[in-house]
Image (cartoon, rainbow, N blue to C red; front, side):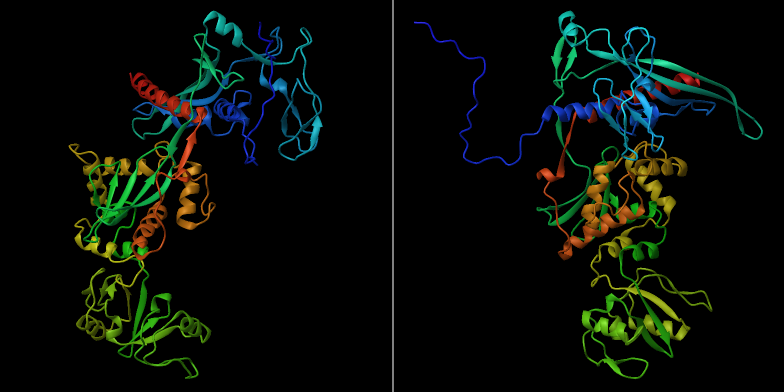
Length: 546
């Protein structure tokens, strides 16, 4: 007996008891959108964003020779031939019209009727499409073979990539060194065939259907973890592209920095290289500094949050003589508010109240020029007596044991023999390039290029957002388009690390999916394209110098 014919389609029966409130997303669309953003092939050069191929070309170009007498500049690029069937109409500008309200350029759709929305002002405009007078077709992407033909013939489904390059040649005056333009040439260069994606999110390579799988990577940003074996915390700044920086401290309360997992060095060396040239600048960047004034051989300290926890030995009075804080009381948050309400700007101190105080800056006798106490030196009773005797009007102090940051920065400064910014740059160069003779220029260029050059370092918008959320609890604390680091970023990252010992902040779980992100096809190809273009840059520089 023959089996009955099986129907072409069956009704899908769902036996699950828990209903899904969120439908399954179109995952193929994720791949297609990613590749569209990478190519931006249907956009005019002035309409493209700084992403994908556009970002790669702009990050590598301009390319100059070693003498600086010639320069290659990137102008624009085009993918495929955009024309009608007969070739009479050519160019993407035939698929554009002008907004009747704001005058902006809008994209028209030759295959769908209805109005077109202007993205600038939100006005709907008529879908005015230009058709060829000869063949009657609009401008579209003309390919030699479609997907089916490529599979049958064993061809690659691709379109030509053409890049417009401008060469500028200069003449240099041997006496003044001034450069003048001698010649400018602009030419369209064929870069090769770039594969196109099919409607299924795949590629046809030599007649075979291929797919690029999205990858799960560690998200850029700043991350902290606890090293269980040693019992200390570790901080990392991970960029999208560029050098990794790790901050750590040991049981001796010494801060270390490691760049690209090379040999570690003192964190204060890194801070000096960033521009904090003196011990005083480093201390003031991390610690809460208070000013102590000397008047009539008596000590007075300015009112600040650092007073919290201090037990006053004398009563604090306002201008009318009313007692705001009685003697022997410990200053609390409420008493600080009372002092502010009573407009009390300073409180009387005794020498015992400055126990555990360290000098935040050099204390100098203005008469003789003698340094009575150096920055980051612990103060004692005899030192303070010498300040009063020398007629010092005020000096700055900090309390490392009581401060949220702790003693790490102060202890590291004590051990660090490097005292100038130049020596710090040379020290870092020796750690990163052992064996190479260091010079001030090469050391400065290496350090500046590692973190402050957008061509070599990219934190990315995602990394900047993660950075802001971790350190400031706000995604928009700093501009997301700011993809390089600055001095403040490093100071805030180190401060967060040091506060972890005091129970402030939280560590990150590297296995948590919130600390990972998906790199789709467009992003993966962008990285590979950049690697190839950087290799080509080296070859171009050598040929331009010949």
